[in-house]
Length: 169
Image (cartoon, rainbow, N blue to C red; front, side, top):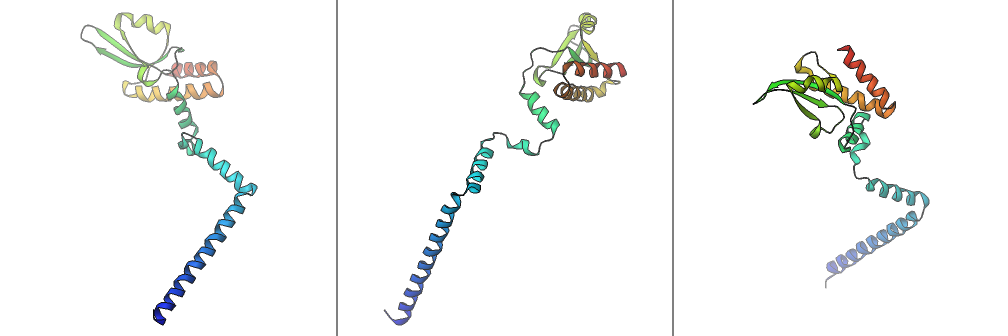
């Protein structure tokens, strides 16, 4: 081995030795920090945060939270509040379409034959849009008002608000 190679060997050894010392110091510091209350708390909080299934709720507004809850609910008993979505000529008769504001979107539609329509409308609260192009808007707005009011003020107040909407149309 020549002097140049010996010098490179010594420099390589010193570099690795310095890195080992730095790493050992960092590991010691890490271990001492992990034993402090604030770091223990940090790891507990981190673990709790990771335990949340749906972290998208962090920046969600109240309406988004409400929508998430409603979509998961399977409301079986309804107050009978429907938005009228129009009448259509079916293959054998005229029919009318209504949407229940409390039911999940997949089960909120009801189709009534023309001859049963009058009875159905007497037994339920029916909201009619000013024009049929506004059915979806009326349905969504009424649904939001109803559920927000149910959550904050109760179901009776929610029905009262829906009746005011119906009566103002």
